[in-house]
Image: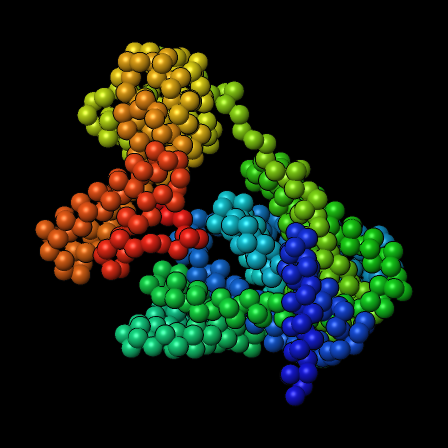
Length: 588
């Protein structure tokens, strides 16, 4: 009954506020934090026991790190070693010392207490940052990998930080605890043990489950892997999330990676939401109300110091200024492991409960500001749109063919022409693609190949072929008529996105219009029929019948200009013409 009693307000308020904050563009994290604060003991008091819920919800962080580990093979981690152990180490040390200096300057704490509070504030929120990178599709980009490298080292640094706090302890009971070097050996031993377990226990286990074909067992085995690896590390006083991450890395190259991702992801989403709800519930609003200017001022100081230090370090490691600034803003908040280290500092009698509550509120407030800061600084963080000022514009080099658009479509066309020793002039407006192509030996000129002056400069007057291979449907009948009138010698071929694009170019003086996925779709259909044993003659007949109907339908559509025309010619499951639903538009 207690679970049901707590679950209704937690999930209800979370649903409302997450939807609201997502609609406002502020992200789900802030919605969970606000919902937790409202249902918690300091506002409505609908749910109690935030600490116990956070203990369960921290499993969400372990699941998150496990999924990230599945994306990172050992080889990829080795390539990231400079950012992990160089940039990550520098960030933790310099941010920790800088924030400690701020605490010393604005509080009456001793240097030991300031260090016990300042070093944890150097850590950022893995649970907040990684979902933001994932939702933006930037986790596997150089920027995302650099952010993750810092977060990963922060997880690794928990053991040294605990050791530092223990070394400064004023609690006589801590004198009997294990020394720091022994904790380090525990860490290495646990990591080595997880690596061996991943290779000699987990992989055979998943192979057995795969052979049995029991999908539900993948869910059980995936959760067991995360919980067991996290529990082992936690039992040794280490980071539970780090254990889950290592387990994920060990399975990154296995054939079961995608199945595990699909099975674990829903649990990760739910538990991470519960984690942020619990963080919101622990937000001590009374501590903020007692010292509002101090809490707000320290949160702003934390954000400013970490942004400045991380930005400077990122630029030192080769990042561009805007990218470095974005990295600083993204990692400027305090993190969930700060709460763990504050508890260690309390146990060591370095800080009192009131101070830990105030600095816990500072962490939570800094986490709440991240979505706002990311939204407010969007223009400042965005890299300027590249221009082609430094690139060569098209010139007449005697080529027989001009290919406009050197993307995935144009590259195939151009290379097949070159295979027949047909000289080709390549034109595109994508600066990044042009520079990348240059690294592979392809000379691509910068310019808008649909403009007459650019085509003339590229030698279109003497070319035999002009091939428009760019994405989209920028060309219409009028534009193609002008190009044909200006360069009558050249045969014009155009890539079309779909039937609508073909209809838009109806009557254009071109040698051919190619719908970009038609041939690949026909080829896949042929392979599908071969796979189920259809006779080759029947396959040829099916293709011919489809092409006949498709051409007849397209001719009628082009003549009428109506995409809905000739719907009765579409092949159906009954292999005979039937009327389609009025709301269905087949535009391929």
